Amino acid sequence: MSKLICVARIGAAHGVRGEVRLWTFTEEPLAVLHYGPLTTKDGSRSFEVAKAREAKDHLVASIKGVTDRNAAERLNGLELYVPRDRLPETDDDEYYHADLIGLAAETTAGAPLGRVLAIHNFGAGDIIEIAPPSGSTLMLPFTNAVVPTVDLAGGRVIIELPSEIDGEDEAASDEDEVAAPNSARHPRESGDP
Image 1 (tube, helix red, strand yellow):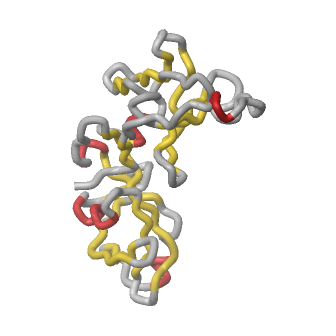
Image 2 (image 1 turned 45 degrees about the horizontal axis):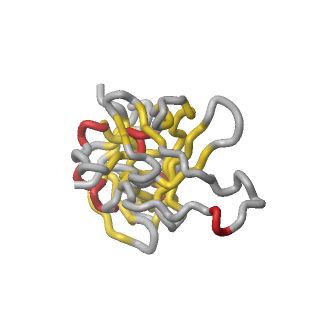
């Protein structure tokens, strides 16, 4: 069985006819219409998005079989998943977050750093978060300069540690700071056609 990937979360009911607010985790929000039935994480329930329209920061969606506000309210907070093998293949240097999380992280010299905990984007580019065996997590730019190798088959990422990591030495002078790395990677949160 293929690994399940969370592609959406149902929010509050919208109106009285069973529509719901739907937050998608796909590059193209309306892609959830093309994946067929979506399931809960445990696979016990299945839902199909019949139609959807874009709203301010979410979709307003109709779920097959949900015809009134009470039924819609009971779905609030449910996360919807799709098997990984139903998602489109990625381009070179493009990865699904779920494929990266849990990979071993090691330096270019082969020293273990920990495991990939998450990929974040706070508005200034993608950040890879690595959880070492002990101590604080590392937050590094997810770029070709800092992460020159992503080896999904081998279950690891290779990290070229910058000479200075922000927050490590607050007394460092401005001229000692590392220049911004080049060539951003492109992690996908979920699948899009």
